[in-house]
Length: 391
Ligand code: FDA
Image (tube, rainbow, N blue to C red; front, side, top):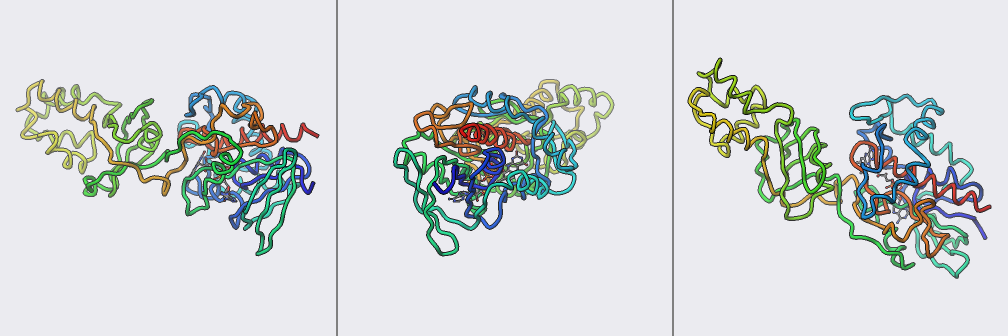
C-alpha cells in the first residue's frame, strides 16, 4: 500500500477532508494550484460560510441528507478555524461572511491544516481500479505514469460548473464505473437568457426585487443584462427553475405601488405617471416597461382600477426565460451522486465503504451566500473524520 487514502480534487471539500483524514494521505489535482474556485469566489474575498446555515438552505432529492454533516461540522466550527488563523472577516448581508482581505487567506489556511498530506498538482488521472480490497490509481505526473495503491478513495472533484476553471465531472464517471447512481445534473445559480436581446437597452440597470421560480421567493437585487437577467435574486431562483417554466418577479416588494400612486394622485395629479413611477423604480426600467404597461397621461387621469392594474403588472410580472447561461457561468451544479447510495454520517458509499464522495459532486446544492462552501467543509470534515477513525 502506497497511501492509506487518495483524495482526488484539491478544492474546498478535498482540502478539508485531507486536513482531517490523518496519516498517509495523498491529494491529487490536475490544476496548477489548489483551491482555484476559492481564490475567485465572492469577488476575490470568498463568502466562506453563512451565519444562518440550516438544512432549509440546500436543494437535494433527499432534503434530510445534509443534516448529519451540517450538525457535526457547523458554520461556527469553520468560523473558529478562520479566527484561529487570524483571518479577519465581516458579515456583508444576510449572514454572508467574507474575508476582509483576500480569499487566498482561506486557501493558505487549508494548506496549513492539511500540511501532513502530500499534494500532487498538474496530475491527471488515467485509470482507477479496485480488486475488492485495494484501489490502484494510475496517474500522469510530469509526463510519467505512476500507479498508486491505496485503501480509501475520496472523490472531491466537484461538479461541471465552469469547465474553463478545470471542472470535469470526473466524480460522475467514477460513480458510474463503480455502480453508484447519479441523479440528473443541471446548472444552478446561473443567469437567465432570452432568445431576443430584449433587455440590452437597459443592460446594467438593477432593482431590488422578489423573484420566484418553482421554489421559495428570494428578495435580493435583480440585474438586467445584454443576454437576459442576472443578480442574486435571479441566480437563487434559477436553481429552482426548469426549462419552459415562467418566473414571477415583484419589482417593488417593499412598497405597494397601488397605494403609493393613489396617494400621490392627490398631491401630484398633474405629473405624468411615468415621472412619479420613476421615483420608486429606476427611470430606465420605467421607460423600457411603459409599452407593456400601457402608461399614458397624468396621474389625475387614471382611475383606481387603472392604477391597480398597473401596480399588479409591476408586482406580478411573469416572464419565461429561454434558457440559462449553462455550466459556462453557473456557480454550482445541481444534482449529482445520489444521496441514497451514501452514508450521511461519513459520505462513504454504502455498498463500497472505502469509496467516498464529498462536496459539490454530491446531489446537495446550497443557496447563494456561503452555503456551498459550508457544504464542502461539512461533508469533507465528516469523511476525513471517518477515515482517521479507521486506524
Ligand atoms: P471544487 O470545484 O472547489 O474543487 C474540485 C477540484 O477538483 C478542483 O481543484 C479541480 O481542479 C479538481 N478536478 C476536477 N476534475 C479533475 C480531474 N479530472 N482530475 C483531477 N482534478 C480534478 N460558494 C460559496 O459558498 N461562496 C462563494 O462566495 C462562492 N463563489 C463562487 C464563485 C464562482 C465564480 C463559482 C464558480 C463558484 C462559487 N461558489 C461559492 C461555489 C463553490 O466554489 C463550490 O460549491 C465549491 O468550490 C465546491 O467545492 P468542491 O471541493 O466540491 O469542488
